[in-house]
Length: 271
Image 1 (spheres, rainbow, N blue to C red):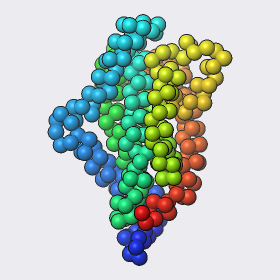
Image 2: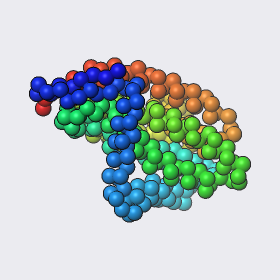
Image 3: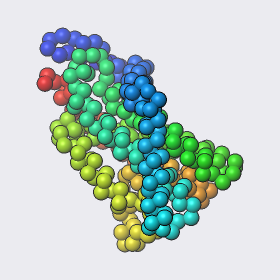
Image 4: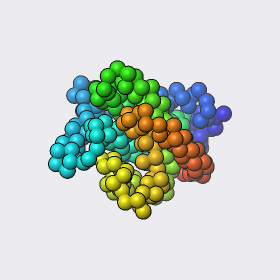
């Protein structure tokens, strides 16, 4: 299914529907452009994209393990299994929340679907973030058997987080059309949530009367399948965390796509 876009009395072409092959092609093409722009056409640019999360991990493991002495066994796996997904989510928000509002003139002038731009932000960050995540997963595994188990569980968890970020980003990008400070509010909230979320400290250190609030933290619920896949993957909570995240995706999609249907005309409206 497709629809026609008209601006200033001129039909710009048929915009592909979300379920069409054309939408997928546009998404992959924009993802390729996004990745090349992040690499800046140089080895140094590519190095920095992959090195940034690893450097952030190195600094924080020194601070939390050596200085604060957080009491967690295999702390390196514990930390990066949540820190790198957190950086991935934060970068996706930073790059994608304003995509609909800032690129509206571009979408009005072309038959590109606006949500292809949103999806490309998610996929580009997923590709760039999953590589260092997989590398650390293999490097910190205790033997071949644990490495295989980790990867088998991690790949679906990465796909799950990628799938979750699409409706979540559509939701925030749609709000950005009307509330232009949405991306700044999201950045501020993420900064606060980092310290309120068991990223660098174990969930057990949270007072029991407050621990139930973690179930209402959507970012934490989306990160938990990845942490479960990497840190103590045989403990048995991977399936439950995965199922909860799937349910959260359904809720996000139920809110994101109806909201997009309401704001779509604003994207194509004349500036």
